[in-house]
Amino acid sequence: MADPIRNYQTSAVPGIRADIDQGLRAYMIKVYNLMGLGLLITGLAAIGTIMLATTTDPASAVATLPSGEMLTSFGYAIFGSPLRWVVMLAPLAAVFFLSFRIRSMSVAA
Image (cartoon, rainbow, N blue to C red; front, side):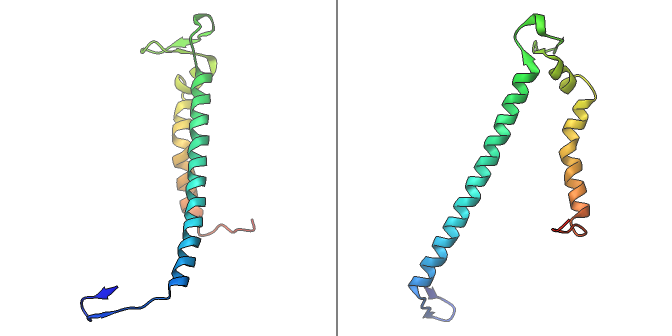
């Protein structure tokens, strides 16, 4: 690669660069696969939650939202009670807890 400031070319050993690139590629593939798995688990949890929370049977509906969605007892507990605030704010509380405690936590504990 030419260096326009010093006007000379740098040389590199081609074998070492290929090994580093293969190791980095394998690591990044592992990271992307884990991220994809996490996204899949999140999607399945969301689908499961909405399937448990809503119904199309008026006989088993506990409440109806203004949009016409009929809720089961689980759906009413999640969407119609103060529990919804706990569900919405729990991840934020976990982030704050971990960010304040990160320096004092140990791996062994």
